[in-house]
Length: 150
Length: 150
DNA sequence: TCGGATTAGGACTAGATCAGTCCTATTGGA
DNA sequence: TCCAATAGGACTGATCTAGTCCTAATCCGA
Image (cartoon, rainbow over all chains, first blue to last red; front, side, top):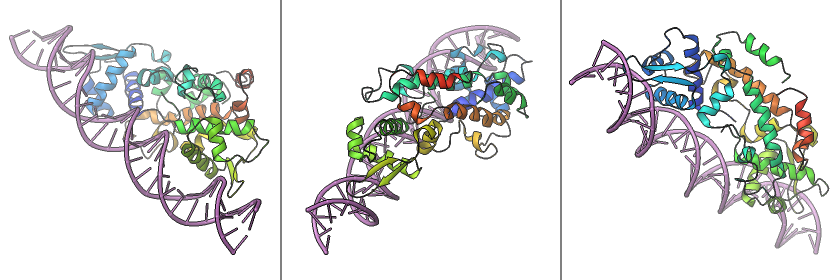
């Protein structure tokens, strides 16, 4: 467990596809749905969320569609997750560790969550969209991550 | 989001309490429920799961209860999460990346998940129960984690 | 030997969350 | 003016989770 939402997974697939096919620039939701074999309504929903988060730009009207808003090398995995699911917090305490946790008085552990949270976040921040879009051999990704001992 | 289950959070609170109060050795579920202000049935459920996973030992009968099965310094956060939620996998693809993912043919991203999964796992493996049980200032935890750049 | 204390194991229910779908309004180009 | 395409929101069905409860098994002490 501790898994990301499926919509987030879809978002990554879509963003990776847009990264690999940056030439036509504008991708209509329908063409993305075809290319990724995801249901169109779902693709539309995901793209809307990514647009709200500023990860993709949208163009309405005929010949409209979606474009990557930023350089794939600058888009980190944690940003994608945050766009789809809100800011990462392993527990309710992790972000704001005083409120939201009824047992805070008894829960001395709560003090540590923000730190742990930050460590996981750091791991996700080391992966960029460009890494994710690189097909097949993950030698490059592995190398990038090996820089810091896991 | 990307948060751990609440039962896992409870498990950590209980384990941390048992770590801090190792003198009486055997803790009855009732006394743990009192000490942590968690509902008794929930505490029982969590302890049962931790017992199955081998993190605590149980003694039935009068004067029975639960004891830590291992040295808190050797129990890592990822082991606790695994005990409560099964092995960590950020997506269905992450563990066994061929089956379980209907879109695998279109999803070139899937290749990267095991790597990312391992990085997050590594972060969680650096935190021990002893760290979590240490109250107040998380200087020690922060120091332990600072060993590897986040 | 008996009775009370305590865990083991499983089933069950109510609630929350999530994925997916659909509808209507808005926008832009031909 | 019409068609193509996104924007925004509401809605539903399915899935998962937390929490509760019940019965059986076990152990200690009187």
